[in-house]
Length: 259
Image (cartoon, rainbow, N blue to C red; front, side, top):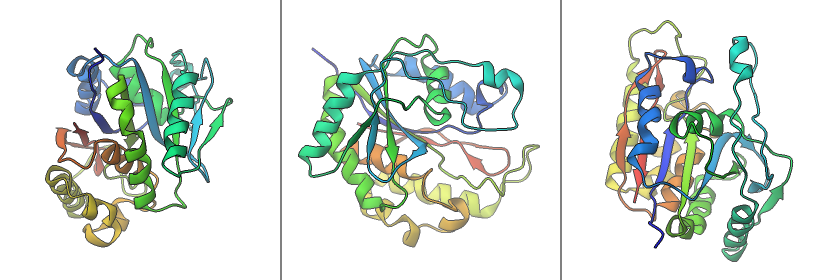
């Protein structure tokens, strides 16, 4: 019998995370796969794939996409040669359409670093098939909760729904050399943890109005939207904290699970 899996949200940090040996978040992600039942496949919702409508990758061998510039050469040599899961992409698209949501399939989309950075650490063998799902920054929080709710049946089919973004993500305020934790970053993360643990989907959907320092912590929506998909896929139940901590001054690396 296939074991039901939780839905997860992880903060993927900088693309260099696989090389940051002293990072607590790297250590957490490197042990994450051992904490979970082994998935049959993974549906990764990445902050770095933005589309007008929900879109799923359907490549049989998704490329490792280096969607960043100015980093050390060794980072561009990293590959995550995981198989794709076209049947899962079709199944997920069918669930979205059955819920009245539009869904498209993209045979050319590879895995961007929002997907492959955490998966490279959690499942380094690259032997679990992966499908990537886009986010729609032009749509609201409720639309992303609806995406997650439509995809919730996948969890009982052995699929790990993994949202990948950033719990606090203001690149204009980070300090790569470290520094004191700003009060605005701590306030937003504290609010987020409280809402997740309370299962307060209404507050999380209204995060721009309810959360302190929302637009400082998240100057744009895309790194928060994967959390809402994971929350929806978790059925709106109270979540639990898997990891907390700040790196590079104000970059929250918080991670949560539902179910």
